[in-house]
Image (cartoon, rainbow, N blue to C red; front, side, top):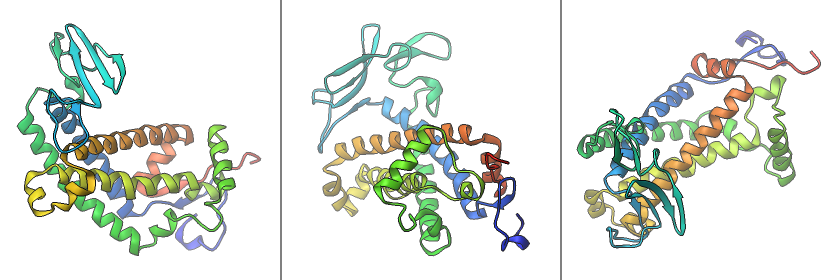
Length: 277
């Protein structure tokens, strides 16, 4: 369906303009930014692979989460749960194939060799890119047409409607025809959680870990319960976003990766044909 035919209801097989230019630019900028921040963040975490609650944290203190090694055994410990992770976490191979004691392996970090100063430079540079683009996107969404795409329509937030959508997704029954061009209630709730909770939470907890900003914005320490609590929450928000990305990619593959990726590159989306067509 072209712009001149917008008055005609779209059907399966028609092309519709699904993603505006600003949305597409923000999407791919965020993809690059998040990947760089995640990988540089893992390098920073390698310097002290333990998480605490409260204001202070050091090796003798109790850590609710730890990635470490015992002799030649790597492990992940969360509370009282201890999982052997040799070869992946705690102890893994270097680029030369030699075992080394390191929380996250070289291929998952920026830079790949241990360099805390450079990792912080990468992380903080792209943190500003993320913060600025996120702010611009939220302002544009709040005052633009995209707000209507994300806010649940009347009746969509009913438990019965949400439960029906959950069952349809579990059975891999995806919307077809014109309905495929709109976000369903699960997508809306997920995107709102990402935009209003995970990304802002990650940005604010990152600011809370800055000693300079602690002096200028001391209320952040009170808001998150101390610098170490902010570090723990920062880690949780980041891996909440990783979980979202994994599920998002799975859904893209199941829904038709060529059509989905093309729509995020060009804006145009071909509606899946109804089953009786």
